[in-house]
Amino acid sequence: MHSDWLVPRWPAPARVHALCTTRVGGTSAGPFDSLNLGDHVGDRPGDVAANRSLLARATGVRPVFLSQVHGSEVLSASAVTLDGARADGCVTREPGVACTVMVADCLPVLLTTLQGDVVAAAHAGWRGLAGRDGYGIVESVVRSIMLATPVNKAQAAPEIIAWLGPCIGPQAFEVGAEVRDAFVRHDAAAQAMFAAHGTGKWLADLAGLARARLAAAGVRQVFGNDGSPDWCTLANPLRYFSHRRDRISGRLGACIWMA
Image 1 (cartoon, rainbow, N blue to C red):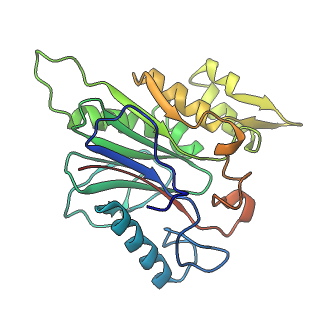
Image 2 (image 1 turned 90 degrees about the vertical axis):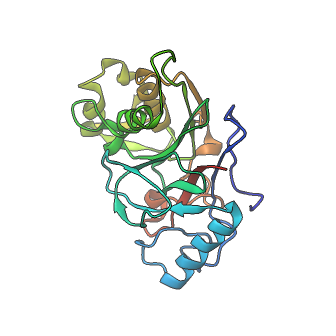
Image 3 (image 1 turned 90 degrees about the horizontal axis):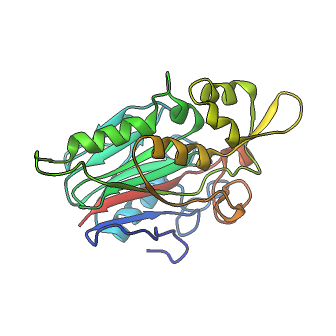
């Protein structure tokens, strides 16, 4: 794997592996240079295919790529699952299958149980995170993990841990009142994740909002993105793609799998 890629520092079981790519190490030409994994952004198909093959060789498993729509659907993936299913989350209990989400300002969330018997990935843009009536991609992926985890009556519910990858940071994510309202109307405490930024505008803490939703869903241990500038996709153009910064942009990939 490329030395610039991010490998989570978290107490995942030894059989669980995860990473988040950066924009370096691939074959695409500008403005997609160089490790663009998105096949829907205008990059040359051959370069995208080469980059995806590079990721598969580096991990030694098969990444399953989704067609993400900023919703809350979660796909149950297996070795025969085709790329391109419309979903914003992926869960699997099969070794050798990498749940994969693509981002370029949205937040990638990787999850596993402390037992290491199921892994999942979620694409958390603000729309998917807010969801409908307070139920979004975080709640959906946690529920999918619980349903996929074998439990008998003598066992407690599985403990889930999560890692947050890079996203647009709270110093850069300017939103309108409709975004703030989408969260606050169902959770008054979410007001703390928005800072006034001019008339009718707010700076939103996307990673902070995800941490709060994860905690409410019972995920007590969350690692990775703490909202500091090094995690901000917009503020680090040499390392991360950012759609808001560049408009025409590649996509990073966040993957999690079991050996």
